[in-house]
Image 1: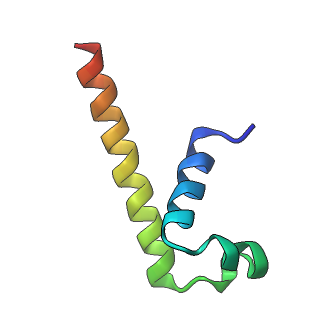
Image 2: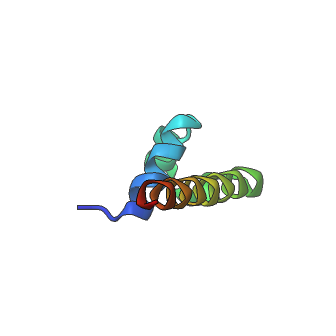
Length: 58
């Protein structure tokens, strides 16, 4: 079973339409801009999840 980080990463690359290209050509096929976009969205999603968890805890 994949961990949470992998799940988030796979969701994001699917949303961006990059999943097939990564599957076929590997991560090296991405541009720096695409890689940065993925990293930024992963960070944003993790922060949103943490905020939601804190909100639910209160």
